[in-house]
Length: 413
Image 1 (cartoon, rainbow, N blue to C red):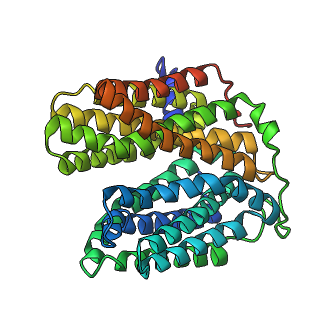
Image 2: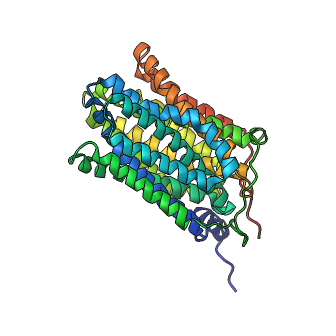
């Protein structure tokens, strides 16, 4: 017999890491992915028309912005209550109830008679939104097989991303029939998602033939003692600051000042960010399950941090778009690993309602604080400082993960 070529074993091991054997995802996870797509699709329907709809009540841009901000504010305020409800009632009842609350509030928005009714109904929707967000996260954490947590998190993020991309396109078409129509369509999509979750999600615990029993809730103090959870809180805050805050609020301002093209350049920046994010999500989840959570967190945060910092120093549109795309790639690299690491901390045997609620809150806090501080820096010191500090926050989060113990357990033979 002839010996195998030298180095073939190492090559095989590398390929095995990059292309591990892919087990079929559980049916319940596929149900969650379908619901995630419907929710994101519906949200994308109303996002482009909401500020414009608010101005039809005779208010200015500031009041229209408050309509957008009240949703995030109510999510933050009600997050602890959502975590407590999950611990008492279970994930699925809270998930379905949250979807129906948002559906009712969104439908009510379509029939709002004045600005204050719109503000009230939209605020109630924020309370329901955090209920189903935390509950869905808890379900994914508990239902995902430990060896596929990264891949499941990547698939879940991809479902949301596809829905968010398709939603504004459909919403723009529906708006031609009136600004109230997208709200009704969103409400219908949420009702369908609630029906899918209630009727199609298994009533049995994964790996058990018994009827589902309420899983014990993981104490928050116990999770806080784990280094990976503390690092995830920090990186979640940094991601909320940069991705959900500065990217949505400060990038359009930079586009208007630096390139004079306003909404066009800002729209392109958001589009290429989404494209970079989608490209990374095609493989980052699998790498998080093979290489580990910590390497993907460090690589992703470094790429996203450097690219975000570079956005503020770009002098022409091509470099602006390239930096935005690279920031999207970095976000896609660490996103699945971050959620998988939190899932490793919680585990499949317990409910993580309170733990996941705080994790979600850190992102919301970052999304609220980030744009405000970035705006102050931009006004006083320039956009270079605004984006430089934002990127620096992500680099500090990467350093925190460098000192964090890996949570991925090696597969047993």
